[in-house]
Length: 229
Image (cartoon, rainbow, N blue to C red; front, side, top):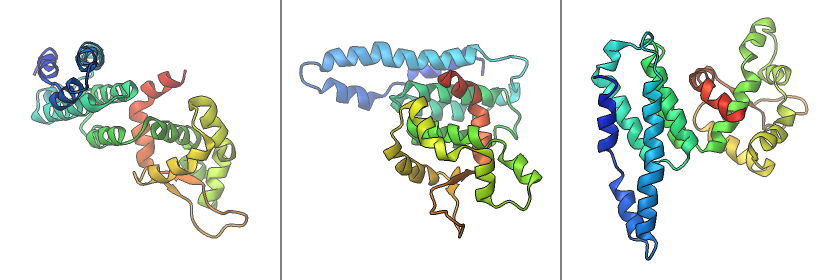
């Protein structure tokens, strides 16, 4: 499959159910349908097309590009993108597709799992995960240097967990009162977990990332950093 062939897949795709629902809205249905078709849909498709045009041909795995495996990934991801309202998440999808084509078989092993995570999480949860990643990305180095440290010691050593609520509020407008809810919901992904156990002056509420979160964020680093700057 050539790069240009992907465009036909995109042009053929359209969320018929959503368009029907929009058309049923009294008075403004027709106007909303035009707006949806000409703006939102066009922007989504443009983002996807741009991601393919920016591919480094020297890095692309040609065998993978022409495989049913990649076609399946592309179509399933695009269907998710059609259902998304958040444009930032469309960019995440696009980045993961691009990375998949420019990666080895081992590196792209969990790309669709990552795509599903992006689809299922809210933007606030994505921001939360990224901030935890930023703060704890050196955690494994600390673990090697201080093998006797507990997990709680390690997190306190390499992160500013106490100021996390303020950092998230300043960067992304996440209310401190919502943070505990976001942490609990995000823990279900398995990317972070709450540190438990008997520690002096510790009542819970501190979370530690796992290696999967590091790999996941490494696949999105360019996109996420652009959003912050």
